[in-house]
Amino acid sequence: MLGAGANGASIGADLTKAGIDVVLIDQWPEHVHAMRTRGLLIEMPDETLQLPVRAYNLCEVCTFKERFDVVLLVTKAYDTQWSCQLIEPYLKADGLLVGVQNGMTVDVIAEVVGPERTIGCVIEISSMMFGPGVVQRHSPPSRSWFAVGGIDPAAAGRETEVADLLRHVGTVEVVEDIRAAKWMKLVSNATTLVTTAILGLPMLEAVKLPGMRELMLRSGQEAFDTGEAIGHKVLPIFGLTQDDMRQTNRVVEKLLDTLLAGFVLPHTKTTVLQDWIKGRRSEVNELNGLVVAERARLGGTASVNAAVIKMALRIERGELKPGPQNLKALEELAGG
Image 1 (cartoon, helix red, strand yellow):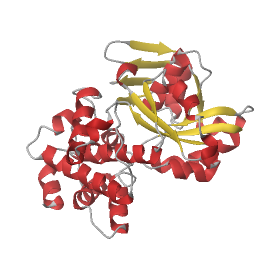
Image 2: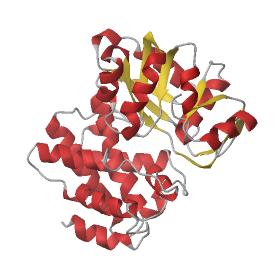
Image 3: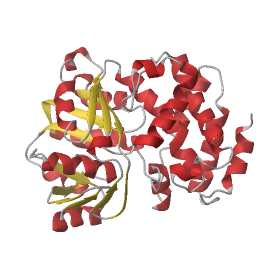
């Protein structure tokens, strides 16, 4: 596990519990120290899991003597390239590097380790972590979902190796077009992650504010339309079926309602809001920013996503604080 934040730690704990030989690597020294001394504490709605794990600091990677069969990369999208470069010398010649991330990172991974060793992954786990060694996991394995797929014929059939691992963590589907599946997740991310974070509220609170649901759906629709214009297929995610995708004018709404009903709790804050609470940079440029960039490349605009980026970057520069008071300004920037 390269990246043992809330989601990475949750995955690592489940794999360790299943008896798999797992190494967790993270860049937060206090978190690594807590895992080493107390183990991992995973708090779920109906169960609390505490178990010892093998945890290492990022700076200790250079001491490793053995190579890994599989590396699950659970980092921010913007950390993909250097993370892959760091771990590539420790990946077996026939090993696999799996991008368990938001964003369209699969080709960045392939550039470093080769497409034959690259597996893309869509992840849907809701979790939060604000203290070292302790994860609040809001979607236990019964309500966690993954899709995996390769991008090169040389990796054909090896998706099942990753799927077999991740089935200890949640439901897993093997897909033929992982890029399209990851874009569908980006549609969901563009709908929810940054939009609700700007209001400083858990998702289920934010969506109830007058006008907010409509704005979120517009943001997601821009991402959906952009994906179609690029040529990505409309694929079901989150356990939905192809029949659920037939009404393409309702796909974004279906994704939103499925996410809110099945994967989050009333107090679940998005990963972006968690980043801001911790004073960290978010993935807004890799999510909403990618929608705007791709739309511009095609000769169009994505006004809602552009407004989301503008507000988010003002928050990251310290010019604004997340809060419901930002909704009016966001609506005005988005127009329409």
